[in-house]
Image (cartoon, rainbow over all chains, first blue to last red; front, side, top):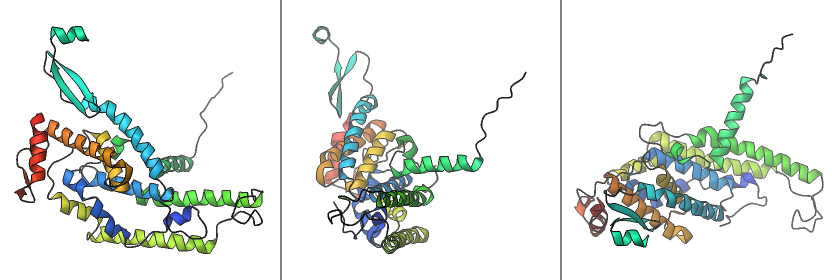
Length: 113
Length: 211
């Protein structure tokens, strides 16, 4: 969303921020603390997000969405490796990007493959 | 005949400046790798904004100043503004830049004052809410999923607009990782704010049976 700006629209305009604005931002971020992420990882992402948003004039929605789609694609591949290891005689079958199940290997399923 | 071949000596100041600019570029465009961003309590507090962000912003402003001045001087007048090309392209105005920079500096000073006093700062509020956390995510064990969740929560608070479904998928993946790696607190005690709730019961029944 395009912010309220001055006559010029350059990089310095991205620095126009409200002084008390940081007080209100944490209300949207407390679930991260409840999920148990470390505080230093949260602070690192907070700082990089602040810089990125100001650099792109707070119009980073499209860029961010594209980046998140790329991240989802990368993460879909790595989720398979994060899943639980099945017992011997059982095989891993992917039920989608976020779901993996262990199925027993029988001669019928072996011939189906 | 012997040839004495020596590598070109780059001054140490130039090397430092180049490494600073490269690192600042990565910080400004969010190009840090997830393993670099997976900072635990054993690491130091990150100082990206103070060490790289603020100087690099002025470096970029200087580059933009030069570019706008060149465009102002050498053509590019047509359609460079909303006056039909009658006026030359805009350059930096000192009063506009000073006001913008002062406002940004005021906010940064306010944030640093918060963090310095330890009152109502980001770390203070985070640690306060962390008293009531119901699971623990090891960011060094799962750097990619931590990177995605933390970045998206900061961007649009993960509850609005288009990334809602994506963020729910990420959060469920986070729950699943915590349940499979056994770092959850809600699998053993389903309390939340001191008492069990419907949310913790649903999470416990749906996620803790994975193990």
